[in-house]
Length: 300
View 1 (cartoon, one colour):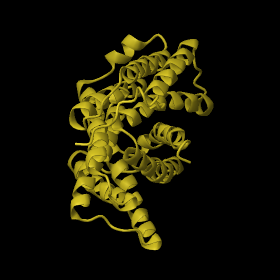
View 2 (cartoon, one colour; view 1 turned 180 degrees about the vertical axis):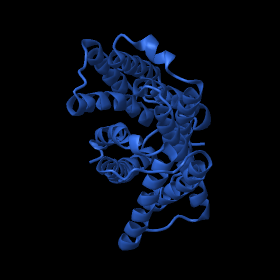
View 3 (cartoon, one colour; view 1 turned 60 degrees about the vertical axis):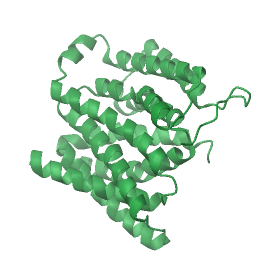
View 4 (cartoon, helix red, strand yellow; view 1 turned 60 degrees about the horizontal axis):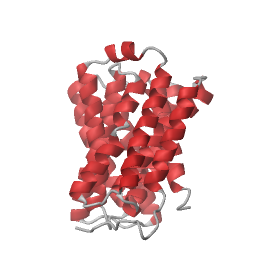
Protein backbone atom coordinates (compact mmCIF):
# COMPACT_ATOMS: atom_id res chain seq x y z
CA UNK A 1 0.00 0.00 0.00
CA UNK A 2 2.90 2.35 0.76
CA UNK A 3 4.17 1.95 -2.82
CA UNK A 4 0.81 2.89 -4.37
CA UNK A 5 -0.09 5.64 -1.85
CA UNK A 6 1.51 8.55 -3.80
CA UNK A 7 -0.26 7.57 -7.04
CA UNK A 8 -3.57 7.18 -5.20
CA UNK A 9 -3.11 10.59 -3.59
CA UNK A 10 -2.50 12.27 -6.96
CA UNK A 11 -5.60 10.60 -8.42
CA UNK A 12 -7.85 11.58 -5.52
CA UNK A 13 -6.48 15.12 -5.13
CA UNK A 14 -6.88 15.87 -8.83
CA UNK A 15 -10.63 15.22 -8.65
CA UNK A 16 -10.99 18.30 -6.46
CA UNK A 17 -10.99 20.47 -9.57
CA UNK A 18 -13.86 18.39 -10.96
CA UNK A 19 -15.82 18.80 -7.73
CA UNK A 20 -15.19 22.54 -7.71
CA UNK A 21 -16.36 22.86 -11.31
CA UNK A 22 -19.62 21.12 -10.48
CA UNK A 23 -20.27 22.89 -7.18
CA UNK A 24 -19.12 26.51 -7.50
CA UNK A 25 -21.96 27.60 -9.83
CA UNK A 26 -24.41 26.91 -6.99
CA UNK A 27 -22.57 28.37 -3.97
CA UNK A 28 -20.06 31.05 -3.09
CA UNK A 29 -16.56 29.73 -2.34
CA UNK A 30 -16.30 30.36 1.42
CA UNK A 31 -19.85 29.15 2.04
CA UNK A 32 -19.23 26.05 -0.08
CA UNK A 33 -16.02 25.20 1.78
CA UNK A 34 -17.52 25.93 5.22
CA UNK A 35 -20.35 23.46 4.54
CA UNK A 36 -17.94 20.89 3.11
CA UNK A 37 -15.52 21.00 6.04
CA UNK A 38 -18.34 21.25 8.56
CA UNK A 39 -19.92 18.05 7.24
CA UNK A 40 -16.50 16.37 7.16
CA UNK A 41 -15.91 17.42 10.79
CA UNK A 42 -19.19 15.85 11.93
CA UNK A 43 -18.40 12.60 10.12
CA UNK A 44 -14.90 12.53 11.63
CA UNK A 45 -16.30 12.92 15.14
CA UNK A 46 -18.60 9.97 14.49
CA UNK A 47 -15.73 7.90 13.09
CA UNK A 48 -13.51 8.65 16.09
CA UNK A 49 -16.23 7.67 18.55
CA UNK A 50 -17.02 4.44 16.72
CA UNK A 51 -13.37 3.48 16.22
CA UNK A 52 -12.33 4.81 19.66
CA UNK A 53 -9.40 6.72 18.25
CA UNK A 54 -7.28 8.94 20.54
CA UNK A 55 -7.77 12.69 20.71
CA UNK A 56 -4.81 15.07 20.35
CA UNK A 57 -3.48 16.80 23.43
CA UNK A 58 -3.52 20.58 23.79
CA UNK A 59 -0.14 21.18 22.13
CA UNK A 60 -0.92 18.81 19.25
CA UNK A 61 -4.32 20.44 18.77
CA UNK A 62 -2.76 23.90 18.59
CA UNK A 63 -0.29 22.84 15.90
CA UNK A 64 -3.04 20.99 14.01
CA UNK A 65 -5.19 24.12 14.01
CA UNK A 66 -2.38 26.19 12.49
CA UNK A 67 -1.56 23.65 9.76
CA UNK A 68 -5.27 23.18 9.09
CA UNK A 69 -5.85 26.89 8.56
CA UNK A 70 -2.97 26.96 6.08
CA UNK A 71 -3.81 23.73 4.24
CA UNK A 72 -7.58 24.15 4.09
CA UNK A 73 -8.80 27.67 4.82
CA UNK A 74 -6.00 29.57 3.05
CA UNK A 75 -5.21 27.12 0.23
CA UNK A 76 -8.71 25.94 -0.66
CA UNK A 77 -10.26 29.31 0.07
CA UNK A 78 -7.75 31.06 -2.18
CA UNK A 79 -8.14 28.63 -5.09
CA UNK A 80 -11.93 28.56 -4.94
CA UNK A 81 -12.17 32.35 -4.61
CA UNK A 82 -9.76 32.96 -7.51
CA UNK A 83 -11.69 30.65 -9.84
CA UNK A 84 -15.02 32.15 -8.75
CA UNK A 85 -13.57 35.61 -9.44
CA UNK A 86 -12.90 34.65 -13.05
CA UNK A 87 -9.36 33.34 -13.08
CA UNK A 88 -9.03 30.58 -15.72
CA UNK A 89 -8.48 27.20 -14.07
CA UNK A 90 -5.32 26.66 -16.14
CA UNK A 91 -3.69 29.82 -14.81
CA UNK A 92 -4.73 28.97 -11.25
CA UNK A 93 -3.20 25.51 -11.66
CA UNK A 94 0.00 27.05 -13.02
CA UNK A 95 0.34 29.42 -10.04
CA UNK A 96 -0.31 26.72 -7.45
CA UNK A 97 1.98 24.44 -9.48
CA UNK A 98 4.92 26.52 -8.22
CA UNK A 99 4.41 24.93 -4.79
CA UNK A 100 7.11 22.21 -5.06
CA UNK A 101 9.84 24.75 -5.84
CA UNK A 102 8.72 27.04 -3.00
CA UNK A 103 8.39 24.12 -0.58
CA UNK A 104 11.90 22.88 -1.39
CA UNK A 105 13.31 26.33 -0.65
CA UNK A 106 11.37 26.72 2.60
CA UNK A 107 12.13 23.15 3.73
CA UNK A 108 15.82 23.67 3.09
CA UNK A 109 15.93 26.72 5.36
CA UNK A 110 13.46 25.66 8.09
CA UNK A 111 13.63 21.85 8.24
CA UNK A 112 17.30 21.63 7.24
CA UNK A 113 16.38 19.20 4.49
CA UNK A 114 19.29 18.76 2.11
CA UNK A 115 18.09 18.91 -1.49
CA UNK A 116 20.43 17.12 -3.91
CA UNK A 117 21.33 18.47 -7.34
CA UNK A 118 19.29 15.72 -9.04
CA UNK A 119 16.27 16.73 -6.96
CA UNK A 120 16.63 20.39 -7.93
CA UNK A 121 16.82 19.27 -11.56
CA UNK A 122 13.69 17.19 -11.02
CA UNK A 123 11.83 20.14 -9.50
CA UNK A 124 12.74 22.36 -12.44
CA UNK A 125 11.75 19.69 -14.98
CA UNK A 126 8.46 19.22 -13.15
CA UNK A 127 7.73 22.94 -13.36
CA UNK A 128 8.56 22.97 -17.08
CA UNK A 129 6.34 19.96 -17.70
CA UNK A 130 3.38 21.43 -15.83
CA UNK A 131 3.81 24.74 -17.68
CA UNK A 132 3.67 22.95 -21.03
CA UNK A 133 0.54 21.00 -20.05
CA UNK A 134 -1.28 24.09 -18.81
CA UNK A 135 -0.18 26.15 -21.83
CA UNK A 136 -1.45 23.47 -24.19
CA UNK A 137 -4.85 23.49 -22.51
CA UNK A 138 -5.06 27.24 -23.05
CA UNK A 139 -4.58 26.73 -26.79
CA UNK A 140 -3.62 29.94 -28.56
CA UNK A 141 -5.30 32.28 -26.07
CA UNK A 142 -2.60 32.54 -23.43
CA UNK A 143 -2.39 36.33 -23.70
CA UNK A 144 -6.18 36.72 -23.68
CA UNK A 145 -6.39 34.45 -20.65
CA UNK A 146 -3.88 36.54 -18.74
CA UNK A 147 -5.79 39.70 -19.65
CA UNK A 148 -8.87 38.30 -17.92
CA UNK A 149 -7.05 37.81 -14.61
CA UNK A 150 -7.83 40.48 -12.04
CA UNK A 151 -5.46 41.66 -9.35
CA UNK A 152 -7.68 40.30 -6.51
CA UNK A 153 -7.77 36.84 -8.12
CA UNK A 154 -3.98 36.87 -8.49
CA UNK A 155 -3.63 37.78 -4.80
CA UNK A 156 -6.02 34.96 -3.86
CA UNK A 157 -4.10 32.40 -5.93
CA UNK A 158 -0.83 33.64 -4.47
CA UNK A 159 -2.20 33.24 -0.95
CA UNK A 160 -3.32 29.72 -1.85
CA UNK A 161 0.20 28.89 -3.02
CA UNK A 162 1.68 30.31 0.17
CA UNK A 163 -0.87 28.49 2.32
CA UNK A 164 -0.25 24.99 1.00
CA UNK A 165 3.52 25.54 1.01
CA UNK A 166 3.73 26.73 4.60
CA UNK A 167 1.08 24.22 5.67
CA UNK A 168 3.07 21.29 4.29
CA UNK A 169 6.29 22.43 5.98
CA UNK A 170 4.52 23.25 9.27
CA UNK A 171 2.78 19.87 9.37
CA UNK A 172 6.09 18.13 8.73
CA UNK A 173 7.82 20.17 11.46
CA UNK A 174 5.19 20.11 14.20
CA UNK A 175 2.70 17.37 13.29
CA UNK A 176 4.80 14.33 14.21
CA UNK A 177 3.06 12.08 16.72
CA UNK A 178 -0.35 13.75 16.38
CA UNK A 179 -3.19 11.19 16.03
CA UNK A 180 -4.17 11.14 12.37
CA UNK A 181 -7.96 11.32 12.72
CA UNK A 182 -7.91 13.60 15.76
CA UNK A 183 -5.42 16.00 14.22
CA UNK A 184 -7.36 16.15 10.97
CA UNK A 185 -10.57 16.84 12.91
CA UNK A 186 -8.94 19.83 14.62
CA UNK A 187 -7.76 21.07 11.22
CA UNK A 188 -11.27 20.86 9.81
CA UNK A 189 -12.96 22.51 12.80
CA UNK A 190 -10.50 25.41 12.81
CA UNK A 191 -10.89 25.90 9.06
CA UNK A 192 -14.69 25.64 9.25
CA UNK A 193 -14.79 28.41 11.84
CA UNK A 194 -12.48 30.64 9.80
CA UNK A 195 -14.38 30.06 6.55
CA UNK A 196 -17.72 30.66 8.27
CA UNK A 197 -16.48 34.04 9.49
CA UNK A 198 -15.35 34.89 5.95
CA UNK A 199 -18.69 33.74 4.52
CA UNK A 200 -20.64 36.00 6.91
CA UNK A 201 -18.29 38.90 6.24
CA UNK A 202 -18.12 38.79 2.44
CA UNK A 203 -20.85 36.51 1.01
CA UNK A 204 -24.62 36.17 0.86
CA UNK A 205 -24.38 32.50 1.97
CA UNK A 206 -27.09 31.51 -0.51
CA UNK A 207 -26.72 27.91 -1.71
CA UNK A 208 -28.76 26.26 -4.48
CA UNK A 209 -29.15 22.66 -3.30
CA UNK A 210 -29.33 21.16 -6.78
CA UNK A 211 -28.44 17.52 -7.53
CA UNK A 212 -25.17 18.73 -9.07
CA UNK A 213 -24.23 20.66 -5.94
CA UNK A 214 -25.14 17.76 -3.65
CA UNK A 215 -23.07 15.41 -5.79
CA UNK A 216 -20.10 17.82 -5.74
CA UNK A 217 -20.41 18.29 -1.97
CA UNK A 218 -20.61 14.55 -1.32
CA UNK A 219 -17.63 13.87 -3.58
CA UNK A 220 -15.47 16.55 -1.98
CA UNK A 221 -16.36 15.43 1.55
CA UNK A 222 -15.91 11.69 1.08
CA UNK A 223 -13.20 11.46 -1.58
CA UNK A 224 -11.19 14.63 -0.86
CA UNK A 225 -11.72 15.51 2.79
CA UNK A 226 -11.53 11.89 3.91
CA UNK A 227 -9.57 9.94 1.30
CA UNK A 228 -7.09 12.46 -0.11
CA UNK A 229 -6.50 14.64 2.95
CA UNK A 230 -6.01 11.73 5.37
CA UNK A 231 -3.63 10.18 2.85
CA UNK A 232 -1.79 13.52 2.56
CA UNK A 233 -1.33 13.76 6.32
CA UNK A 234 0.10 10.24 6.39
CA UNK A 235 2.45 10.97 3.49
CA UNK A 236 3.70 14.19 5.11
CA UNK A 237 4.53 12.26 8.27
CA UNK A 238 6.51 9.62 6.36
CA UNK A 239 8.26 11.68 3.68
CA UNK A 240 10.51 14.71 3.40
CA UNK A 241 8.45 17.81 2.65
CA UNK A 242 10.41 18.69 -0.52
CA UNK A 243 10.05 15.15 -1.92
CA UNK A 244 6.33 14.91 -1.14
CA UNK A 245 5.60 18.30 -2.69
CA UNK A 246 6.82 17.06 -6.07
CA UNK A 247 3.70 14.90 -6.28
CA UNK A 248 1.65 18.06 -6.77
CA UNK A 249 3.28 18.42 -10.19
CA UNK A 250 1.26 15.40 -11.30
CA UNK A 251 -2.10 16.81 -10.17
CA UNK A 252 -2.67 19.15 -13.17
CA UNK A 253 -1.66 16.28 -15.44
CA UNK A 254 -4.15 13.91 -13.83
CA UNK A 255 -6.79 16.63 -14.01
CA UNK A 256 -6.13 17.10 -17.73
CA UNK A 257 -6.63 13.38 -18.32
CA UNK A 258 -9.86 13.39 -16.31
CA UNK A 259 -11.09 16.44 -18.22
CA UNK A 260 -10.48 14.58 -21.47
CA UNK A 261 -12.72 11.68 -20.47
CA UNK A 262 -15.33 13.68 -18.51
CA UNK A 263 -15.63 16.85 -20.56
CA UNK A 264 -14.12 15.91 -23.93
CA UNK A 265 -11.12 18.24 -23.59
CA UNK A 266 -8.52 16.91 -26.01
CA UNK A 267 -4.79 16.88 -25.30
CA UNK A 268 -2.22 18.17 -27.78
CA UNK A 269 1.21 16.67 -28.50
CA UNK A 270 2.64 19.54 -26.43
CA UNK A 271 0.60 18.34 -23.45
CA UNK A 272 1.85 14.77 -23.79
CA UNK A 273 5.41 16.07 -23.98
CA UNK A 274 4.85 18.14 -20.85
CA UNK A 275 3.46 15.11 -19.03
CA UNK A 276 6.55 13.07 -19.90
CA UNK A 277 8.90 15.82 -18.71
CA UNK A 278 6.97 16.25 -15.46
CA UNK A 279 6.96 12.50 -14.77
CA UNK A 280 10.73 12.39 -15.28
CA UNK A 281 11.10 15.35 -12.92
CA UNK A 282 8.99 13.71 -10.22
CA UNK A 283 10.99 10.50 -10.59
CA UNK A 284 14.25 12.40 -9.99
CA UNK A 285 12.84 13.85 -6.77
CA UNK A 286 10.89 10.89 -5.37
CA UNK A 287 12.82 7.76 -6.36
CA UNK A 288 15.40 6.66 -3.77
CA UNK A 289 19.03 7.46 -4.50
CA UNK A 290 21.95 5.09 -3.91
CA UNK A 291 23.08 5.20 -0.30
CA UNK A 292 26.50 6.41 -1.33
CA UNK A 293 24.94 9.44 -3.01
CA UNK A 294 21.99 10.05 -0.68
CA UNK A 295 22.10 13.00 1.67
CA UNK A 296 20.60 12.32 5.06
CA UNK A 297 17.86 14.53 6.38
CA UNK A 298 19.08 16.51 9.38
CA UNK A 299 16.74 16.65 12.33
CA UNK A 300 16.75 20.05 14.04
